[in-house]
Image 1 (tube, rainbow, N blue to C red):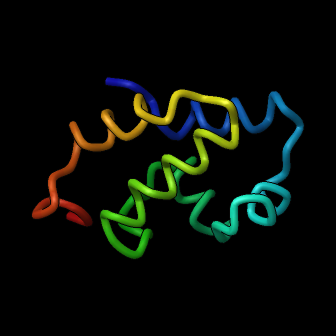
Image 2 (image 1 turned 180 degrees about the vertical axis):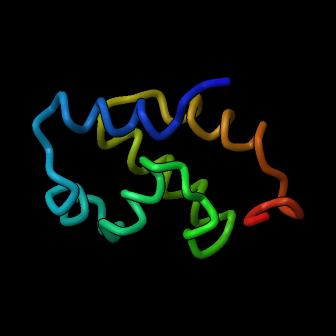
Length: 83
């Protein structure tokens, strides 16, 4: 199993980026970026938002966003999200 949250956090920190800076650049609220980094997916508005936020955040960090989406999809289906 791939560690989504730590990978995102480590990539952000290695680039010297603060959550508020990424928030301004991606238009994704810092509380949602933090939820992604802490893998608290239940705190995101809906599964489509979670997938979209992962894609945008990973791309901003220069990561392969499809890896993150695939891992997320392997853990959750539409009916299981937030449980």
